[in-house]
Image (cartoon, rainbow, N blue to C red; front, side, top):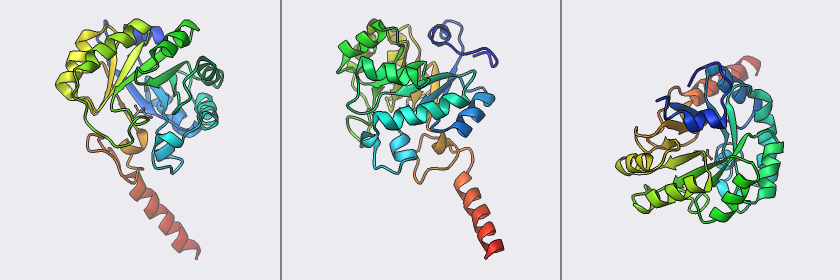
Length: 240
Ligand code: KIV
């Protein structure tokens, strides 16, 4: 997408027709959000990966609405150009909660799965844009697994019909991800799902080497943990 223009839901929805690729990364605080915005990231996601990445929880299920609102507010202060999307946390899907995330600064909300498709429709009906999320769903099963079920094609179509403006495909077998992308007109944004999506998303801490553990598909561009550790050890040694 064009680097300087403000990114909108409409722009993301139409990006496929223009052949533009979408770049999406996660942020949980103000300084990272500000750097990402400056770098030209199109969508900044306040993911509920907040739980395992930042809060030290074993998975995303312990993340609450107050957690998401607190971090969304911080990220919103740093984002000017990018589209800000916030995850609806575990067992929190409702129109009222989607509204709260919007009031905290998110332009759209992301919802895992389609089991609550009626509520997704209601959220869209209330004027709040929804990004879908199919494939591996951490809120349903915290253990990562590749999705190979052709039923995902129907689920993607249902999401499009319900009014979703984009769909994250997490750990979907690449050929299936391609079929899904071809079955809908809205963009698919892949994570560990191959190249045939309209965009790619990564957990920023994996990309920068700040996580204790990161999945194999996540390209670690730099080992920031090692650099920070070395710097802090030097500081400790200098000041002891
Ligand atoms: O919570 C998250 O960070 C996500 C991404 C992995 C897409 O949902």
